[in-house]
Amino acid sequence: MPKGYIIGHITVRDPEAYKEYVERDTPILKRLGGKFLVRGGQSQLMEGDAFERHVVLEFPSYQEALAAYNDPEYQEVAKIRQRTADSTILVVEGAE
Image (cartoon, rainbow, N blue to C red; front, top):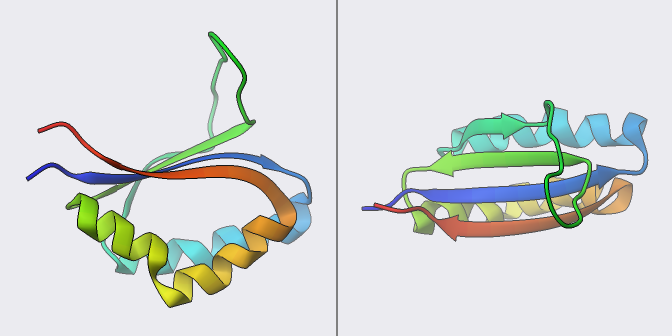
């Protein structure tokens, strides 16, 4: 069964307030089976347009990634990100 991924592209507008999001989302997403593969770090835009920060979380399956994103506890914390950053979030099924 292919793994599932939550992929986020983010530009933080309020770094101080955004810290609360990072502190609170991490334990929730890990408890729901997520493993951070990419979280910030260096990146270099090679083509097109991009946000400043990139995050990739791996889950055991696509369904588990969807469930984690839709989890009510996570959605409550996601409001912090939505207030403090511009973002595009995708849930993607991996290749087998």
